[in-house]
Image 1 (tube, rainbow, N blue to C red):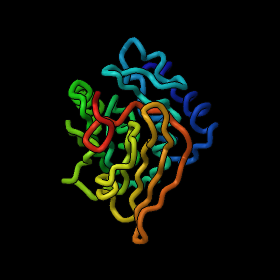
Image 2: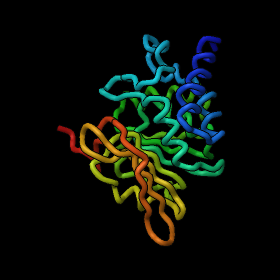
Image 3: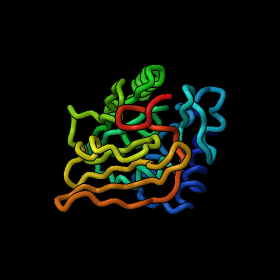
Image 4: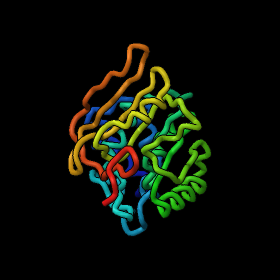
Length: 216
C-alpha cells in the first residue's frame, strides 16, 4: 500500500476524528486500519481522506469520515457483537464495523453497488461481512436479534421493523428527518422499553424502501 495513503489516513484520524472528540480506541484503530481510498473510484482516491462525503455512483455517497466514526462510536460495539447495516453503499462503513464487531450483516438495494462491494470485501478478506441484495428497510429478520443496527440513509421516521430486530440492550443509530436534513438518532432497547437520544444534525441521502421514502 502506498505510504501516501497511510500518511493521509493518519492525518484524517488525528485532525478529523480525534480532534472532534471521538475517543473510543477501537473506533480510532479501525479508522486507522481500513484503506478508505479503495472504497472510491480510482479518480477520487486522492480525495478519499478529505473532510467531506464523496459520490460513489447511483446518486449515493461515501459518508464523511467523521460521521462514520461518530455513528460507529454511538453503537458502543463489543468484540462479540452482531451488527446489521442498512445501506452497504461503498462498503466503507461495513469495513470499519467489521474491524470491531464479530459479524456484520449488510443490506443494499442497488444491485451494482451490491456486486461491487461484495467483490471488494472478498478481495480485502473481510470474511465476517455477510451481504444481501434487498430492501434494507425491512431489516434481515433471519439473523436477528442484533446487538446493534446502523442505518446509513435518512429516514422519515424510525422503522418499527428494525427496532423489533434489536436484541435486549441493543443500539440503533439512524438519521431521521425530511428529504434534505436529518437528526442522528440513537435508540436503546431494554426491559423498560425504548430510549431515544438526539446526537445532532446530519445530512444523508434518502432511505428508499417499504419502511422509508418511496421512490419518485
